[in-house]
Image (cartoon, rainbow, N blue to C red; front, side, top):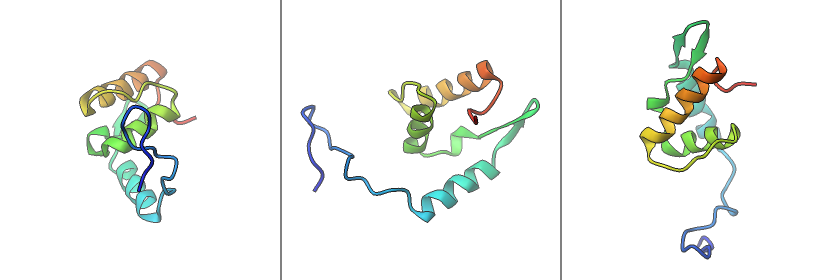
Length: 87
């Protein structure tokens, strides 16, 4: 049973690491990406909500909001930095 935080939501500190299934799914999503300019941009519309949040956190951006807001934030970041967030 997950711990409950002071805000009433579950704690994810006991969350299991990514499985091979998660890795395979992300690779498949990357393969479905579309070409934008000279860079290959992921098709964020096919990503799951938790994957969008993880990518935003990796880029040190806010991961709050609904799915559309997360996608817009990633696309805007890609356009601003001229890449798909890969370093």
